[in-house]
Length: 392
Image (tube, helix red, strand yellow):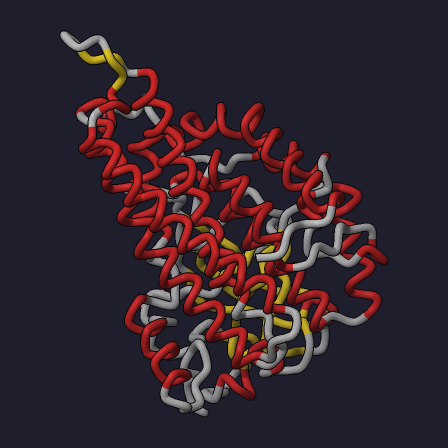
């Protein structure tokens, strides 16, 4: 794993500092109330982080993938929900960069850089599993004035918090997503958008992701990104998985750091020595540290190889990173509670929240079975994309 240049390392260090001083202290509150971490978004905007995936020519940071992944990890160590929402927003920026016209880029990137607005990505649907087949039932049709969207989306991250949402749709009458898939940027205040606001989940509560219904929602002609079907061929959708992996590793890093600090500070009697002196605790911490190092190295290696990889290669890199980060993250956050003991179950400590957030966030597609299928196909010399596209 190559070392960062001084400027890159300085940025990662700065994000780590902002996370520790401002973002992490708010995490429990946002988790408790189940609301978008708006103040944390504002802090990151002031540091330029909302422009991580926006090219420098448009005022963004234009981060390479390795630096970006390190930034997301740093945020996740303090607040998983903030890291996940910033990653989704950043992935929308990548789609805009890959698919949008020059005029669209100027308009949408400026909203982020100059005004700190966030963009969400809504793809999940009630009757469709992206782990099995990339199929959209939300329909978009073109009329004289622009586009009209109808459908239902589930797990709509940043609902009531972002400025625009990139809604994954199928052109009316289309079933082959390789030809019919169209992403449409819908303003948050567009008439016809409705949600019941229900979001009472195990973890990732501050991502606020209720279901949303679109009924005759009209958007302008310049709301569509690229030509139908192109979104799956530009090597961006695969970056969702790599960013998820970075979030999982960051959550686990934060949990293990808490356990290590606790073991050093907690004094047991009658020996009057820290818990860290217990050989059993040492073995547990050693195992978790080794596992976490392995996951961190795979995620970093995938990020370093990202730019030079084509879409299929990125699918493999994303699958490997997300699979290992999932398995290691679940193991680390679970055993950290065991190491800390009964206090680990108290909500006043971050171990409990880390466990809930990790268990919930790892449900994001692709699933473990789908990831292993993709990794296995690659090892066997067989072609296969990250997602099975319906109709192709």
